[in-house]
Length: 190
Ligand SMILES: [Zn+2]
Image (tube, rainbow, N blue to C red; front, side, top):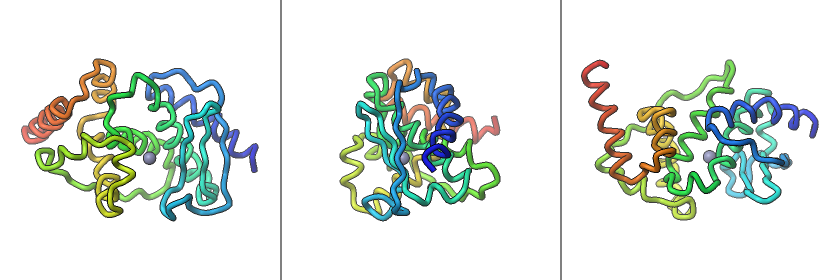
């Protein structure tokens, strides 16, 4: 079992770090817990920044290869976004990036395409939340944020968003600006 997970991690990690243009964390330990979900009956995986860096996956992630790779990719992405360069990245965007990268490993799995459409001007609260503040949200508000996260990153575009991280342009205004411009591009059919 442990070797199956380690082999999957070896397959997935290089792709994740290539997407994020970051160096690979020196050592990552992956644990699988017998429970389907972790802690809150809802979470499939967790990261512990360490050192040593650890990823904990719930047993549901072992049900098939795609699910395991998706779980690993998601948590590896989170892990690699917890460094200094990412300090100012709002949590909702970190979550969205992890979801977008995870989807690259979905294989033949059916993924719910319905994304929460957010009105950027009504959703600025989202971009101001830290990880800790997001965790403390009431369950329905966190669920909304989680569902909206992927849509926001897909609308801005992963490469554009990574360029914003690189340029340290991550204020709420910068993000709204990026979203508005994408709306304008889509409206003109560009
Ligand atoms: Zn996540």
